[in-house]
Structures are given as C-alpha cells and as structure tokens.
Image (cartoon, rainbow, N blue to C red; front, side, top):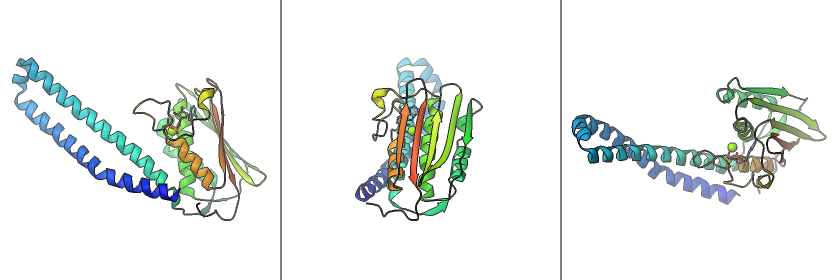
Length: 241
Ligand code: ADP
Ligand code: MG
C-alpha cells in the first residue's frame, strides 16, 4: 500500500502542471473571446456561420473549465488517499471530530435535513485524527447526498467491549442489493458522470483498516443506509503494512 501511495502522489503531482496549463489557457481564451466578441458583435450577428462558431468556441471553453475542475477534484481525492500513509497519531475525543465535521457540512444540511446525535460514553481514542475526520466527512457527505428532499441523519456512538462504534444512519434512497458489495470498490458510483468520484468509501475502508477496525453497511432500497465503523481502543497503531 505504501508503494501505491507513492505512485499516486507522484502521478498526481505530475498531472498538476499540465492541468494548470489547461486551466490558465482556458481562462485566457475565454477572456480573449469576450474582447474579440465585443469588438465584432455586429458582424457576429449578421453572419450566422460566424455566430455559430463563436458560440461553439464559448461552449468549448466552458466544457474545458469544468473538465479541468473535475480532474482537480479527482486529484485531490487521490492525494488524500495517498497521504493515508503519513500518520500523525493522537488521543482524541471522537465526538469533537464529529461536531467539527458536521460544522463543515452545515451548508449542505440546509433546513431540510435534521441531524440527530445519540452519543454514548467514549474513552479518548488513539488514532490519526485527520484520517478519522476524513472518514466521518465522507460518510456524512454520502448520507446527506442520499437524502433527496428532506430527511434525517443519525450519528450514534457507543463502546462495545474494547471497540468504539460509530453509526451513521440516514433515511435516504438506500442501496440496491446488487450494489451493496460494490460500494467500497474504488470508482464505484451511482451519482452519474461528473458528479461522484467513487473514491469516498474506498478511502473510508482503508482508513478503518489502518486503524485495525472495519466498516460495514446495511441498507435496503428506499429505506436508507446504515454504516457502522468499528475502531478498536488501543494504545498504539500498528505500523502500516
Ligand atoms: P461517490 O459518493 O463519489 O459516489 P462513494 O465511494 O462515497 O462515492 O460512494 C459510492 C456509492 O455508494 C455511491 O455512489 C452510492 O451509490 C453508494 N452510497 C454510499 N453511501 C450511501 C448512502 N448513505 N446511501 C445510499 N447510497 C450510498
Ligand atoms: Mg461519496
């Protein structure tokens, strides 16, 4: 996994330079088109062929800009994935992580989604807090995105034996039976081209694994989804394999 991490980090770094060039050029082209367009506005109006070409060029700039933004999103997710090997380990209050993640998601919650907290007594957890927060962020994001108009997200925590359990439950669209075993596959998404990356859950899976824990899902179409993260309470993390 460490080798994969290095590869991803390297490739994503290499892709950044050409991506930057595409973004900058698209931006310059867009502005140049605006200037040229304003100068020859009358001609464009009179000449239908020229008018259509102008519209095509504008459209291409828009498409390129959103394609570049999309690549950027994927690269960010990949870099996050690659960074999982760096571990900064600390003893933290998991509920604080949940609260700060929810704060970051306030804008996505709106007033249509209610968040219910059902927090148990938890010991401070020895973990990599950045990774755990990312795991919470990905799961909560998915829960919110699964709710079409209005609904409820429940975050429940408990200690069971020597494990801490975090349940993230939503009453959204749910998961089709044939998809249940694929949701953790890298690249699997039902969110459509340009919307989902399919990298959220594989990252969660790996983070849970690196903490010696695991993550499970239960769901039925139309009846929401229930993700359970199980993390062992321990004094040190095992070095990455
Ligand atoms: P993405 O969110 O980019 O699609 P993820 O890896 O986070 O990628 O999730 C993969 C897929 O798993 C989603 O596209 C969706 O089909 C399904 N999924 C994940 N969480 C939920 C949820 N809470 N409710 C319904 N479906 C979910
Ligand atoms: Mg997701």
